[in-house]
Image (cartoon, rainbow, N blue to C red; front, side, top):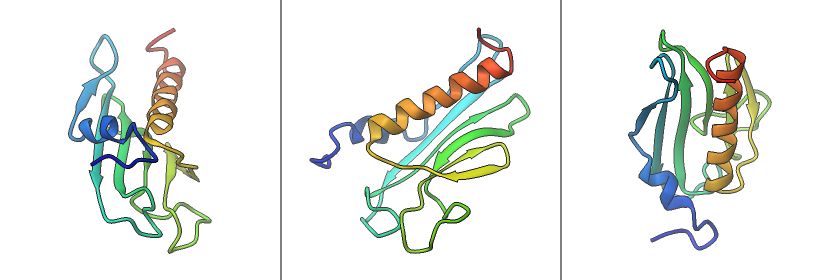
Amino acid sequence: MTDPRDATLDVLLDLDGQVLVVDPDGGHWVRFVAKRVPVSPEKPHGIDYSLTVHGSDGERLVGFDNAHPAAGQKRGGPQDHRHRLRTIKAYDYRDAATLLADFWSAVDAVLRERGVIE
């Protein structure tokens, strides 16, 4: 059953386990992990997720997840955050559609920075 507050959650959950190549030369790829979990203060949306983009050497370039608190976040509160190379910042999760849009924007930005796309 879909969360009535987030009609797009099934879209995110359907991506679980997908790995997609995101550049013509096959050097960059994205991975999706998204599973339902019991609602808790740490995971108030009822999902455990990790959306990552990787370079050809496998290094994570950007990631959005809620596996642990970000720097400055209190334990016991929402753990949503964004990784950008070695920087971790809190992320304001609103719904699955916004998470996916923000993730794809970050993927586009990193591919542009690396000269993979124009």
